[in-house]
Length: 316
Image (spheres, rainbow, N blue to C red):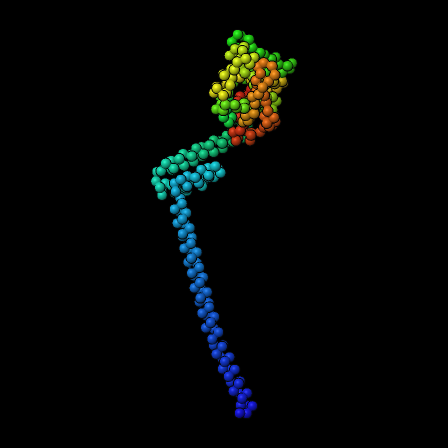
């Protein structure tokens, strides 16, 4: 066979093979594209099925107890608006259950408290401190103060006994005592007593000018006063309420200005041994040093409470 004939055959063979490859390539691409489309469709179907299953699981987990827990969490976070759909879900899926009643009551109470605070905030903005309603029975933690009287005087009496004896202190020159007869009720056996202070009022600020000290109002006998016997009526471990005569020293300049008696929300007067008679008394702790200057915002949360106003301006 000649060289020319061999070369010609080779050329024809290569050309034929090239033609076959060119015709097969589009078919392979089409097959791959179709397979890819099928897999994508299956993937989307699986995703949809997964989402349906997740929703079914979530619905199965939506028990009355679980929904009540969610409602309480929303109330705690202050997001009351999101409680409405949860209450509706509880009602439509489970009917009038005990959990629905608890949740509905809790939401109603939270909404009422929110509205009360909003109304107070608006009134405070309009009338300042005098929009606050004083309370003679502020609750501080496990303690409740029952204030029986508040008055300015020059002499503070306390430690009275059944034999007619008592102790007293006279106010310093240029000052008076603001006397507070108060009974402290407590569920604790050894409570710290609440901090109560005197604040002058000047526009939108209150400034602290004095703090109350506690002394026992009475002793059962001279023997209990000097410590020979235990006075159980002065011991919270045995008595649910103990009477005190408290007082704060106020300069006569401040006593003539508008001022307020304020409970700070802290229990920080500690019972301890004392030198002299009686050998036990309540003393102020360093944590009692509450804010020197108060604004209206300090009363919005309910931490600070006004016990009483003195020398209120006319028209407020």
